[in-house]
Amino acid sequence: MNLGTIIGVIGALVMLIGSIIISGNSIGAFIDIPSLLLVLVGSYFALMTSYSLSDALSVFPAIRLTFRQPVFNQQAIIQKMMAFSEKARREGLLALEDELEDLDDEFMKKGLRLMVDGTDATIIRDLMELELTQMQGRHTNKIKLLNMWTMLTPGLGMLGTVMGLVGMLRNLDDKASIGPNMALALITTFYGSLFSNVFFAAWSSKLGVFDAEETNVKEMVIEGVLSIQAGENTRILALKLMAYLDPSSRRAMESELLKD
Image (tube, rainbow, N blue to C red; front, side, top):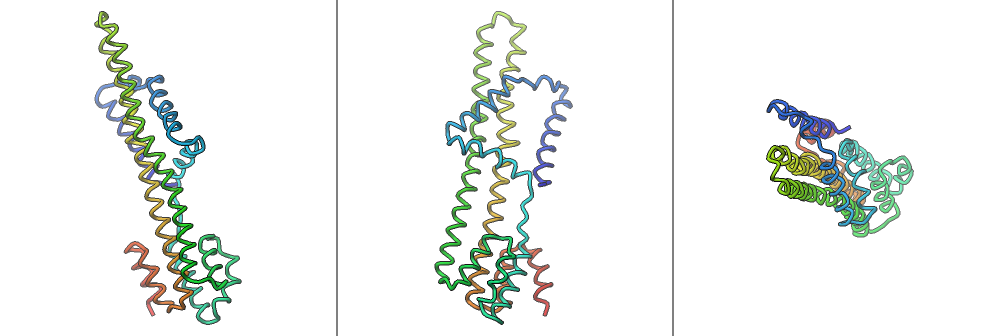
């Protein structure tokens, strides 16, 4: 589970509810089912109008992803690449063929398979970068979906407020109902701002972080495959790949792997 997402969502809701209670208001005053349906369901149908049905349905699995912690394990990838490099330099590239079946990383396996088959380095890079580009495109589409939902919810909130104000203005003779009706009219704006800023925008940003991390790992794999094919020194390969790590992870690996 992604603790950042869970703590963030729970923390934001606790602060929201706490602020309502501390200010002397009732939680029940902020609950209105018709307003909630207009903002949340209405904006989702607007999202469905903007995208295909399959795209609109895919937004929910995308949101679920933000509650999971992706594990890329860059250090293990570097160690595996170093082992492949040493074996290839000792026994030749064909010696790696038996190692491929044990690989769980399909992207790395595909690149190494092309290398073992004697594919030109330029073609390997083109094919792997094409797959990387297609992955980024799929990720970008999910991020755009959430960004669109982020933009739609405040608009539906304002629409609900206008609808409430119209109903209120039609009954100005009943002065006792003006205050409650005004409060009810503003609840849709409250819901629009809540879902837009606390949920959808934050989830979209988290997906962008995941995309950047996975892209970085795949770029590292491409560099590793091409370096092995070129027969580069294993130490040079390690230094190249460790450049993709954050500074603290890089220092830890350098002290462990390059201490000789």
